[in-house]
Length: 326
Image 1 (cartoon, rainbow, N blue to C red):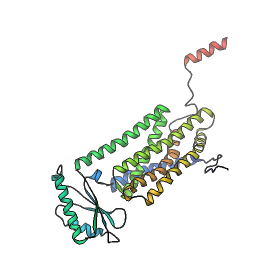
Image 2 (cartoon, rainbow, N blue to C red):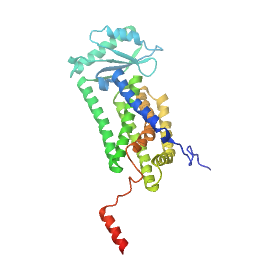
Image 3 (tube, helix red, strand yellow):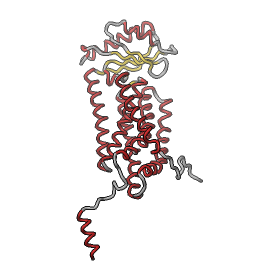
Image 4 (cartoon, rainbow, N blue to C red):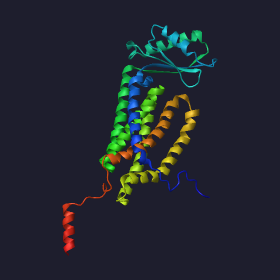
């Protein structure tokens, strides 16, 4: 039986022909991601924002009364700036409130605040069911944010150092730029959609870094092999050849991941939606950056056809002269 091939063996797509427009697009997407984060902000979950989160379901109501809940909670003296959002189904909500300074290190105060909120909601909505309560102090949430930022920076720097050692410094810079692009676009998507940004999303971004790195290394490894094999081939043509030769592997890897991610995205629990959505988006972003960022950057950073050919030392030249006289 003939095997199914999603990518023909003689594929010859001219990726590098449009490298300049796509590079400009990538720069704009990177800047746009950070502009969105700066202007719209991230919708921090309790992990990063601190406070009390109450997840509730209205068992006998088709849609949760978000506006009424917000008005009810605003009327409470102990509650400041309540955030009420649909979470999961139309009749499910997430209620987030800040904890006052006196609640720091005082679990009883937080419990009393939760009971007060639940009682206020139950008066007008007896069908409410509390599904869960999470509480994180302001100090702990600040530590979470700092640790998460350090984890992302450390991951990208270690990736750059690894590729620098394995290949050359230009490859390390190319990989670092591609990873920075992937993280920036992902953060921008979360700022635009205002999906909850929690520790789960940090795990998703680290997974994106790992996938993008894996794809970039596969392409870089083929580029290095072809640089040794085709000494006289122009670099843009060699990069196109390398990307096309690894295209079948890239497509199969991406499709395999999508087969696992799409059912979770559409039918999985609401608590995992942000995580799965981030990884799914990162799958496409990481593949794009490996092809249109990591590879073309090598041209602009001076990689040539003899980059991996050992340079002759003066001793080698003298030995050749001696052997030529014999």
